[in-house]
Length: 376
Image 1: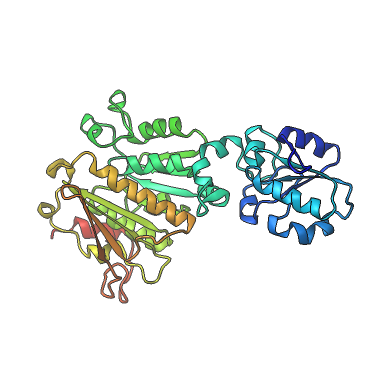
Image 2: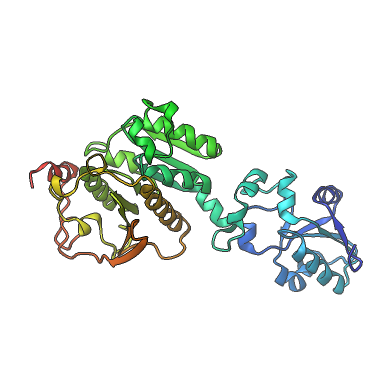
């Protein structure tokens, strides 16, 4: 007891509530958006003194106060005592402990398991319970379950992105294991999508994982990425990138681009919802000749490099879902692993771009595919 105010456990509070006590959640509105104790009334701490009489005018009714951890609820109870209320108690451990003990919640609550799993996110004002709920509702498609897709998928799953679609047509090869950390030696020969599903389900069994063992083509690109909030480009070839860019523009889905080559990598965001955003073809109007852009199998790649770039892609995807920070729209972030330096280049929308310029005409995905099939 502090200053005549009882401090009680959540279990005791629930029992008293069942006997007629009034439970008031004094957290802020955005905190309570993620859920409240069942039957509680939401009243921010700053409004307790002004609004309590409209909720309960009887000074002798038992009133229990709860917040996130127990500090604000004690202050709220002290305010009520100063106003003449006589039967008061503060819930020690607050909403966090209420959840941990599995006590009833209003619909929309994160639940005890999620509160524990994402506790470090919930401490960030930019995320909190509302943001974690957005991550849980988000739908992200990853094109490729290889070098870039592996770290991106791992961290998106760990962050609680609720719905992920993994798209890849390849199988695990021993040469992948140097950098594609979703896969293991025991799963050599297994489809990459299935190997990725096993790894991600083991990390976070609460998320929904869909797998599509397919290669992006003109006939399927829209069907594969439609209804997603963000697409992450982990492809390793120009035909896929051009198709993906065109489809994301048509469907108005943000595309998080990433690429690696030997010891260098780059990341950007192409967001068709933003009138000022460039597209992939503002960066590469036409595909380079094969000898000018060898893939990893031909040129090699430092094994840890895709990890750095893939994590940056995951970060950009989370920012887009939460609507926080400054996404890499109109900017190309370049990383040199040997020099340990980052360099940012401006990447404005090109008015003459064949993909999104003022005179650009979209004539179908077959024509986009043909661009990369034509000799350069």
